[in-house]
Length: 198
Image (cartoon, rainbow, N blue to C red; front, side, top):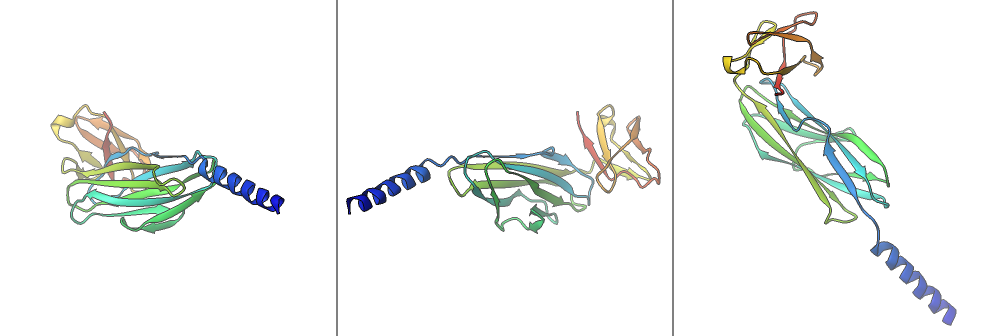
């Protein structure tokens, strides 16, 4: 009987020691620029990475919220190919050292100008005190005017550096002639997004 009690007590102590000292940890960050200016009616894409830096498998809860909205704009966030609107929680499970880079937030704009702020919060369910949040900003301003294959910028923006993107989000070559960006790619499909990168 003593052996049985010794075994039970020893097992309980080992169980409590292992569960009480589990090492949970994670890193969560945005791989994209967290501030994006896009043309009216075009989306902004934000890509994230989650890393389990602990020694235990963990489940992570995601909470996406729009903190500042622009009328008519919408947001979705995706995880492992599943996309939902803000306010709907999603979960991800990672083993020690595992990485998930399938997380993204897309902000769909309209002709309305303004700035939308979205926060993506991650909580470790293994240790709910561990949380990380990233805020992303999308802006559409009325300062860029599309003009047949190029964008005319106001005089105060001349001399700034810009990155231009085609409708698929690929960076394209351009030249700046006194504030006018001309598309140099074939087809002349027009500049779809202009981002200032001083």
